[in-house]
Length: 372
Image (cartoon, rainbow, N blue to C red; front, side):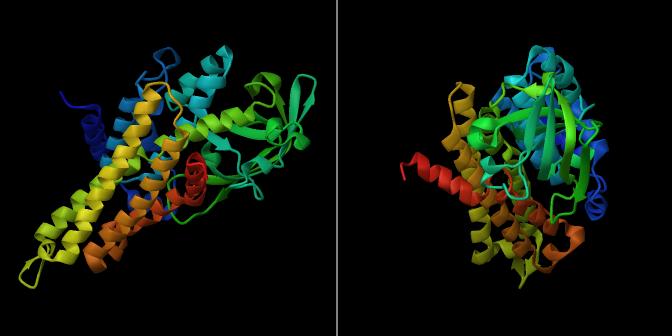
C-alpha cells in the first residue's frame, strides 16, 4: 500500500502543476488548486474528524505536506495553505469555544473559507509585541483600530485572526486575538506585490472602527500572547515540511540533468565540482528532514518543541535557498530562464528566511535555549 507521502506526490503532480508560470506572472491565486487540495484532505489534516478534518497525527500530517512539496511546483499555493492551517485552524482548535470550532473549522477544512493571520504591523515586525492596533470594549463588542502588514491570504480571506491590544501599557499581556470576518464594516484590504510566492496573495489590512462581537474574541482577554506563541511553535516547526519535499524534487531533477547533460564528451555529473554540489544538496535535504521529524516526534509525544521548531525553521529555510542556487548553477544558462522554472523556485525560497520569524530571530531563539 502506498504511503501518505506517495499518495500525495501522485495527487499533486497530476492535479496541481498546470499553468504555474502564467499564474506566477499574473500574481493570481490558484483557487482551482486550493479546491482540489481541500477535496484531497490537505486543509484539514491535523483537525479532528468531528470538525470536518482528517484526524491525522502530526507525523502523518508532515509526511503528507512533504509529499505535497515533492509533487507540486506551486510554492505559493502551498504557502497559502500552510498559513491557513498552522496560524488559524490550530489556534481555533486549541483556544476556540465550542461554538467557534463548530462554526469555522468545518468550513476551513473543506476550503469553503480561506483564513489569514494578522499580527505584523508597519512598525511591529520582529518586535511583534509592540503592536499598535487597539481593541476597545464597548458593551458586547470590541472596536478595532489599526493597520496590519504582510498578511498572507488577506486579499482572498474570509476569516482573519487579528491581534490587537486591549491595554497598550500592559505590553504583551494586553494582546488579544479576534476572529474577524471579511464583510465587517471598517475592514479594508490592500493587495501587496512581492518577489516570490506570487500565487499566495499578501495584503495590508486597515481597521477603522471595526466592530467585532465579543463571541468572536479568541481565548480570554489578554490571552493573545499565548495564542501567538502556540501558533508560532507549530508554524515554525511545520510550515517548511513542504520545502523538504521541494528540495527532494530539485535534487532528483538535478541528478537527472547531471546524468544526461553532456559537455566535453561526458555527463556533467562526472565533473567533481558538479558532483560536489549534488552531494551537498543531498546532505542538506537529509539534515532538514531529520530536524523536521525531530520536531514532529516531540509534538507527537505532547512535548514543547520551541527550540526544535526554531532549529527546523532555520536549517530548512537556509538549505532550501542554497539548494535553489545550486540547482540554477548546475543547469547553467538554462537555470536562469523562466521556462525552466528554477528561477521561480529561488524567488519562492527566499521568503522562507523572512516569514514566521527571520533567520536572525531563529538564531536568537536557539541561542536563548542554549543559555546565551
